[in-house]
Image (cartoon, rainbow, N blue to C red; front, side):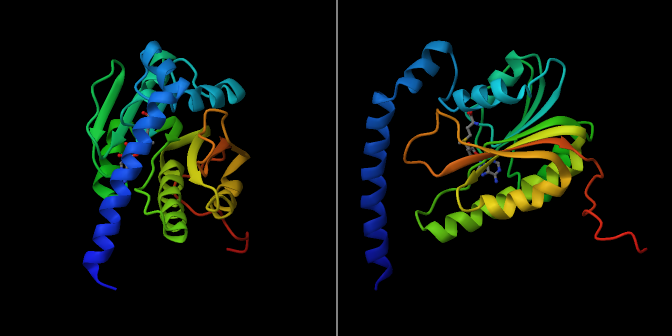
Length: 224
Ligand SMILES: C[S@@+](CC[C@H](N)C(=O)[O-])C[C@H]1O[C@@H](n2cnc3c(N)ncnc32)[C@H](O)[C@@H]1O
């Protein structure tokens, strides 16, 4: 199999899928509603539903928004009176009440800068961060798991005791990630908001009541 063959298929696949994406955007009532209500993405309705269920976005809370662009989750959190620190690989048009950092969250230096912007702690971590999909199920699941593990570790280092986490996962990556989250939070729930597209394999982990303890791993026993 030649590399050129792979590239040709890739190019055709991408343009067909962009056309499908555009068509779907035109038909989607939530895209229209988001535009009418001044939100930058339809995904805001997923966060709204999660917030209605779990009451996470409280006035005065400090919120970290990972994978924030184009910014609808940050817009919503700021409109609820939260102080927001947001990060994305892509640029984001400024939002009042949101401090934006452009960078790769998976890099240590970006995480260090985020810690500084947060004054080392926050009440809620939101992650709608999505590594680029390859269309190969196993690769995409492994990437989703790796990103989610990084988010979980970082959340563990900045969340205040009692804090919460909302973390997007691909279905299939959920059992590993929930297993890692469970010992560190009082409650973990998997949620698939109604606004999730039917053909999407996304699911959100909502973890409540962070136990505290910074970056330390949970202790295996009390023998030391
Ligand atoms: C689904 S979008 C987020 C939409 C956002 N919640 C909103 O409501 O506007 C996912 C974002 O994750 C970002 N992303 C993916 N990997 C990232 C990384 N390693 N560091 C920072 N951002 C990343 C992408 O650039 C993309 O903007």
